[in-house]
Length: 399
Image (cartoon, rainbow, N blue to C red; front, side):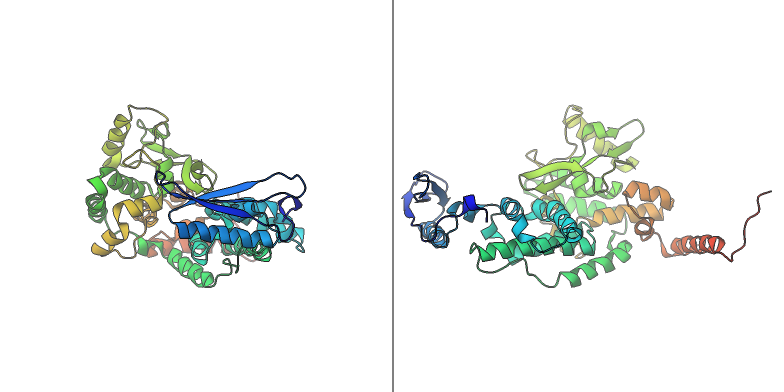
């Protein structure tokens, strides 16, 4: 904790709870204290649904103040607290260790948990964050480093008395990561079998949504036919679609951040081109017409014009219920991407082209979508290449 945030031990707080029935949260709790140096009287207030919640908040702040902790710290976000206490949290570590820790903090922890107050970080919140990192195909070491710095920051909060236990010390994520790896070894098994199954799913999701919003079904069709992530579909603008060549240039994705949803670059940090098949071209033209061909307009939004995420799609369509009823209990929103890549591989798209469409960093990742028969042919070619490049292998003579 920095000095400017510390209060003398035993500082007393005055507190009151005001009932304001015209407000959404009618009970406002407020605490005040006298700064012994400046003699000023800072204050902190928060609104609650019930009087008991307000009094509980006051009791917690009084406890913190008695320990010499600034009451304002109790509501600091994880991102702000980590920034203020980074040196303490990382003390004793070498630079070669702190660099990957800080990368994990910046790229994983802050975007998923940074907006939450330190006191609201729970085991469940950390579990869900790690699951999101796994779903985003983060490497095992990346997750390990991200958790390591989170544990250290929360340990400092524990020492400061802000929390009474460290919620970042979770177990079981290694096993979950292994299961995710096993799935990625055979992504074909996660794909829908055919077009009929896809349209059936899209129609069922629309029927289950409030107001039967057809946009949800269009998102599902578009995501599967382009092998795109839901965040990339949400980030698609009219200007990204070339209706002459029928190519979509994927430039951005919508993703959660401490301040809400934001648009940022694609996962691979590179734009890529994806073909738009005839089956979804009419759908695309209708969407473009609905926004008056505004080049900056989003091609797909929620019923009220909001940005779409995988969680929004799940909740708005009762996804889990629908896929269970259709017999696809395993199906997740990301599996629409697996579906598209599997179909393209089966259609005979060359693996090097498929890799560019998918935006994969490694050819090995793309090869998992090939049919076993085609995979064996590819493997045979790679074995021959290695043989020809070995020291004792035969050499081609150039005449």
